[in-house]
Each structure stands twice: as structure tokens, then as C-alpha cells.
Length: 376
Picture 1 (cartoon, one colour):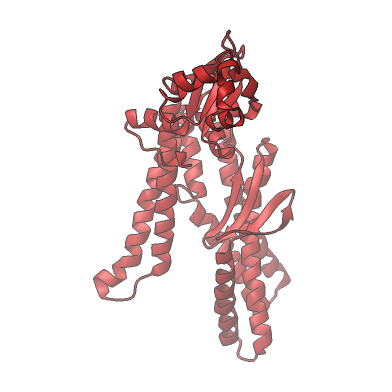
Picture 2 (cartoon, rainbow, N blue to C red; picture 1 turned 180 degrees about the vertical axis):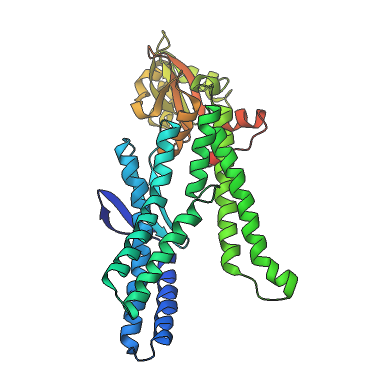
């Protein structure tokens, strides 16, 4: 389901997932009926209105929590792509990781600190003002939920904030950010299994109903922690490698001085079904590309005296990468730009060859690591 954009906060796009409306309704129903039962003289309309206000305040707290992460990230020069509210809370999508373990720690801890600040502030306001009745009940819920939000997120396993704190600590000790993600991801999986087990134990031991909320949280932790750990494993294996290391053997390259007839005879018929070729000059400088379908624009009786250069299309700079660029960064470029391949060149512009997702996947397979992150 597509997320719904509802505005911008501090320049950050703000979205809600359709699942958020379901939770909003359930929370409104729960707290509205709870207030009606706790205060029988309270008019039904007011009880439900307070229930809705409570639900919105709780989601506002989740939003504030994510803004805590986002503001610290922005101060570190890290862009924030979006903040999204969904079934299990919220998510701030950052453009990149922090550059140091200390920076990563402060980004991670900022959210729980905001939640704790809200819990303490609301408690103090209720105590100082002496508010009573339904409003006091609403403030009590707001304080307790923010406290729970802070403590729950401090569980030391990804994708929770505590997992990111653990990641930063392991990164500091080992000097390797990917080791931190791997370790915190595995811990997150353990907590996921614990949550699922706690949800199923009442049924197994007492024949009672399943705690579906615990099972859902456990499943959420398992899926996301496992994905983070696997992704970190891939990145760790790719560290130290460059774009040049993943260039395809016998890349589809032709020289611009070839005639179309020579191109058809020497390259197309002998290739492994390449539909597009990289074109270089005699010195190996990358000039552009030529596609097999481009030959259709020239009558076959002219192929013998028409050269490849005549059909060469200049290549966009965004489709090339220098050979010494870290392969981890190249992989991220492929994903961000939704590309399947890049031309790899030396610093002087001479062509090394073609790199594609299949070539990176083969490197990972040779290292006995799966590569789900390289899906097209």
C-alpha cells in the first residue's frame, strides 16, 4: 500500500501509511470507551472526542520521537528523506549513516530522550496544575505511553533505537560499522523470537488465547533485524572492493571505427545476447553507446561503409563511475538511481568495462553470501 503524504515538518516530508488509520480508529475506540466507563457521567460525545484527541496526541508523540532522530541527523549534515507513521509506530528515513560511532549514538538516543522528556513534562504539568477528571486521565495515558515508548525503543536490538545504540558501541569497539549492524541485527532477531514465544506461551501452557500483539511485534523485529544483518553482511563482504573488481569479463565494447558490418559480424553474432554496447575510440576513451536496434535505422547495403561512430549515442555522466570507487557505494548508487548497470572508467576517462547487478551478485555468491538487496 502506498503511503499518503500529509505535509512537511521542518522541511521533511511527512507520510502516513494506510495502516495508521486502522490503529487510529482502534486507539480512539479503546480510550473513548475506557473514559466512558471510568467517568459514567461524561457525555458519550465528549468521551469519544477525548478518545480521538488521546489517539492523536499519542501519534503526535511518535512523530516527536522521530523528529528527535531527524533534528540530530540534520545537525550532522545528514538529509532526512521522510518521516512515516505506520502500524508499529514511526520511521525516519535518513539519506545515509552517521560518519562516526559517536554521531550514530546521538542520532539513536535522541528519539528516546524526546519521549522521556514528554513523559516527564506531562507528569509535571498534571502535578503542578492539579488537573483532575477526564483530562487528568488523558494526561496520565500520554505520560505512560511516552515512557513505554522510550523504554521499549531502548531494547538493544535492531531495528529499535536500542539496537542502533548497540550498533554504535560495537562499531566503536571493532572500528567496523557493519560488524555493529550485524551484531545488533542478530540481537534484534533474538528479541523477535522472545516476543513471538511470549505471545504463544499462553496458548501452549494454559490453552488461553494468543497475544497477537506480541506475535506481530516479534514478527516485525525478526523481519527487519534479519534484513539489516544480512544487508550489513553483504556490505562487509564488499568493503575493500572497488567498481573495477566487479567489471564483467568480456564486457560489450566496440571501437567506433568499426563498420556496422564488422560490428554485426564480430560482436553481435559472437556476443551473449547483448542488446547495447559501449563505444570507445582507438585510445580506449568512452564515447557512448550503440544498440543493436540502432542498426535498423541504416539500410543493410550501407553497413559496409558506415562506421559505429555514426550511430553512437553519448552516455550520461550519471551512468558512469570511476573504477576506484568503493563497491559498497556503487551498489547504493544502483539502488538509489534504480539502475541495473554502470560503465566503469579510469580517472582519465578510458573505459574499463561494464558493471551490473549480476556481476556484484556473483561476487557475493563466490563469498557464500546471498544478495537480496540487489533485486532489480
